Image 1 (cartoon, one colour):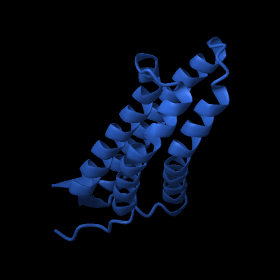
Image 2: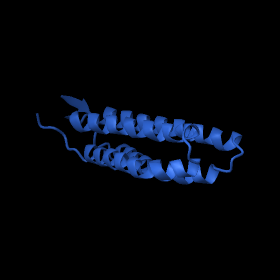
Image 3: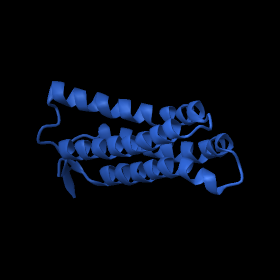
Amino acid sequence: MLISMTAARHKLAIVWFSGAGLTFAALLIITTLGNNGHGPVLWDWFLPAVTPNLSLIVGVLVSDLRNKATQGESVESFMYHLALWLSIAYLLLLFITPLLSPFTNAALDVDLQNSKLPLSLVQALATTALGAFYVQRESKS
């Protein structure tokens, strides 16, 4: 099935900026209202988890605006759907991780440290799928 490259890129940008923005807002509330001193730990955990992908997305969108290379281009939808669902899964895991900490016996910084390895795996898969989608060429079907 073919999809518009431009529309798909815009949808992925919306998913990433919405998911990262929601988590950003939650962490901002936690660090502003909480007097537990976990602010630096939360931000040290969160920012490296989203900044590379958001930077990639912004770079691709700016390149599209400058070059207008993908106007009217259609591509196979498989890589788009893979990138979309891996991104959604990753962003949901990122959002719920600090919110689950009160339900564990460990301190927040320990929970965040313990989450880094599994989250890194999902992040790597999502980032690879995004990269593969972004470099697709027009389908000649």
